[in-house]
Length: 489
Image (cartoon, rainbow, N blue to C red; front, top):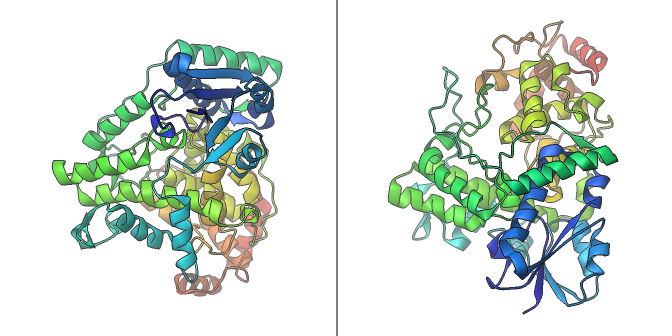
């Protein structure tokens, strides 16, 4: 049996064909020299890789080297590797002698099945259509040929505002217990920093699974205790509760610790056998086998130049306070809290990413490619394939609708409705002009004014554009936001 080379995001047992298969693991220090990663992301990657090496014992060759090339020169036998998760890594392994590239693993739908589906479509490739295809293809949440409950999506039931008392009554997710491997990783990172390798954010306790055992324990707890509340509050934000009822499993999926199909079937069984609410179950399944797979597949299906799309002509570079996660420089309550969450945990859930961080960056005209890199390096679950679609296609609307039908941009009213951030903030979400004008509300109208000729006309935007043209203070708002520039709000 050939030795299986596992990258650091292919660490679960489903990346092997046999429990006794020989394995190669490589830890490359150069990876952390090339980019400024969040300290906690670097810790998680190294901890997961070293834990897997410890689990495999003599079954694995574990090499620590400056580069992958240096490590591979020490291995003489033929190798095989599952399809890597980035274009750069795929090109690298394809150029190597003695290395066979196998089909991708760690996703529900295969690259070939997605390509067949996509090739048969006419027009844009929408996630909703792919999700229906995947549900039918894999026979998930179906009663015969029909979706359970008669509907494919229960998204409209999963948009509740947060509880007015600011608390969500769900048990806290189990947190990992650090061990000697984590202590070794922390000491090594301290040493690397003294050598000059830079990291962003703050160090902190490891909050995310580094082993399949930890990931499965968190999945079981989520399905039993948190799934029911996840659905209705999946879009809510609370300043005092960054986790709400989210599964906190995205990093485990993206490290390859957890097979997504196991989570999908587990959620389905929670509905069929334990009576979990259908809307919550469907919402979780849609995220895992719908959106996550869709983002993976569009990364490979669209041409490589898609990553550099910038159809709105955004030209500003990310400011230093954003790059450095300097939340203390920010007065706006929502942005301060979310940026502090990235600084302190290397994680916030999908709505703060999209409607606070991404929304703010879109309004300010920051370069999408720089944002892809920022999200990729500052988040524990960030990878090139993850952030290309989520940032270029969705958050920044840089491809003018290949993935979405309108920009994900909003004023302060949305944040006020879906969070407790606006109470006590120095800015008023109802105001777009003046010293207390909400930077999101003012930025929303300034963005639309600047891009009125670029955003394609469609029914979803027509009413908003007409409303903008009726604003008597639009020129003043645009001038105000131009003066604000990229200064922290």
